[in-house]
Image 1 (cartoon, rainbow over the protein chains, first blue to last red):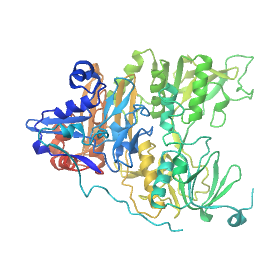
Image 2 (image 1 turned 60 degrees about the vertical axis):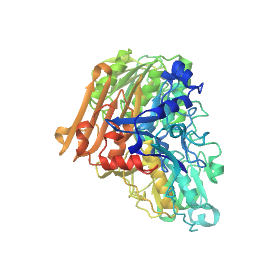
Image 3 (image 1 turned 90 degrees about the vertical axis):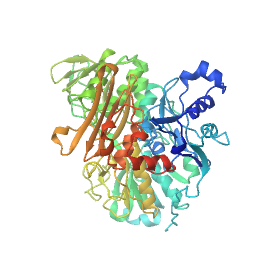
Image 4 (image 1 turned 120 degrees about the horizontal axis):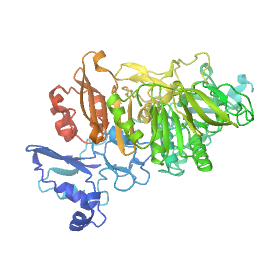
Length: 160
Length: 466
């Protein structure tokens, strides 16, 4: 599957990825409207980390064996078998925060703006390229497929 | 009883039988089916439901999820995976040496491989009962005399419940509605007690928690964490009785009317939830034919002492990676992982369980908390152990990191739980954090603060297993 890869050395900490992520997940999908009327309710689904000149944006890695899926008590967090994206079904999510407890990247957040739901990167599945990647001015985020991608489980034939 | 000697001719033989229809059982069934597309799988459950998520029952009680949403696998799960589900099948005996098991309705199932994922059941302490009215007497709702409660009879007293199954939640919900209950007592301030409290407080109830230890969530919280959460509960008019337990339950007309605590205090009560703990369901194992201590003992491949019998989930004692010993840790994520590993190994694969550790997330009246690992240990009594903590009770915030031999082994976060999983990763991967110790309890401790190699591994890797 195609994933978002981080090229830390190119990140300039401009946070355009955050802004476009918020717009993408707004109701209006319009940048001015989003920031004037909706912004307080929209959590960016990625995290920009920064110390001095060192920075990078990190979002869900859409793990093969995702700890958040394993921890989810409601079945809301699922890895889509076709797209490979790990997506939280916000209708099913009860906001128990088990996924926050389990994610070793710390990239799932509490969204309590309406009902409690886990908020995370959905890989902009309806876009050709996720908006954080598309709007990164310095290619610090790349969306691509690496051939080492999938860990193949050994298929064992039925003994009986 | 049917003739056990003739079972080979009469009964269907399953390649895989799974006892238990919850986290571990279903994860196992799914793993088996990925590796073995044709082997016959049957899941036996003593309950009357297709799968539902046990940890969701308190959310159901609170009204955050309905009876449709409580299923964590889709309606078509069994059909799509070609798995038979037999409900209302309570296993009463496993004949380990002869590969078959017997259910309470005398049905016999023969297996090639068996997974025991029967989970846990609530413990009922034997509390004395007495009557407060002469007319009603010390009787249960069927009129039977009793002098103390136990596992068998507590359901016969109106208003006394446990909360570990969907049936429990349904009964409590209808009892609350029917009797217009506004106040609930919870015996036990541990995990189930506090998950019940979370739901009841969310419903606007007043609660009284009775806890034997000197603080709530004593197994995973320390004094500071409990202090913040207890204050929050008390500030809303609820009670917490610590260092105490119920000595006597008062019964009136077959219903609970109140109780007296060890210290003599009495409280009126029409709904009591008993939540002092759960224990593995192992009653069907006779004469230690499968090795049991508190739970069923399994090796790192989730195998029991019998070659073709595996066990997973809340019923087992598996490796605790922090204590380096086998222990029962009854939590959902480990049940899923253990079930999945058992399934792979049952289907001929070879997957190792690297051990687990306790973790828990609970939100009380808007204060989220996460605790994991050896969070409650007293560092003064431990070798090579240090604790870094930031306690801010005014803002209802607390963060504590427990470090042993330069590895994180425990965490408590109260108020702000963002990025708690980063610490779970540090614990699981046993990362040496000596180079970043100064920052480890910072409020915004992130990936960028991690030791260089581990940080590089996380940032430049793909969706890897960590």
